[in-house]
Length: 363
Image (cartoon, rainbow, N blue to C red; front, side, top):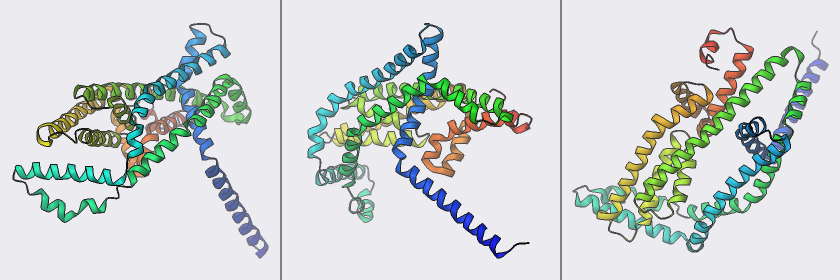
């Protein structure tokens, strides 16, 4: 029989549960930086595991020496990137310090007028459309200096984050056996084999995935750099690097990268003739980036990703597309790793399911 006391206890229990969940979410929000460090350290660990195993098995390194060597490998790569970009950043520091909203708006207006003049010379009445839309008055150009200040602030705090990530990564490498032993104690005996097999396969597949991702970004970076260098675009290395990083966002990232490259190309040719220099160079850059994307989408990306996570290219495309509709850009970025984890867990716990058998036949 349900009494008022039972109902009251149920309500209090539900309220208590909600309060605990709210406190937990609040604490997670407060330590979000730490969580980001942990995630980045975990990704570095997954990337570094094959290197660590190679040093131990092939070169017969002791575990601690292999750990330190792997970590030094990451440090050298990071130092190399920093050494590469510092001179370029310093060379542009004066321009950044003098950057103001008025100059940005002036340059944007100048480029717009040049575009209108070019279109009108080809009997296209673009001035009326642009003036009626009054685009310039609707754009708040102050967001650009604010964005740059945010980026510079992020770079200034990069050192602390980097040290924290490397410190955590070191112990992920060094004590990974202890983590496995600890996990075994927490896992129920009835599912121990399935869970441990899942973790081993997930570790293997995600290691291959992140290594494949780095390889793909490296290929795209080199191709972008070649395109920009052919047309002597200033700071080609920085632009190519930024555009390659944007490729982490499937399908949308390359589009943003192409627009960014076009804008920076036009800005770099502000003093040149629009019809004979600026426009042809910009179109050439767009064509070059389009060719790079054709190579990436049809050659490097399907081969690297389908091999690394044992999934068909069409399967990966559909997963990314669905994740984009459900969770936007963040969903597209994490779609492949999360889908891989779900496939592995499904194969271990539901091996007799026909759909799972079809999706995991290559795992």
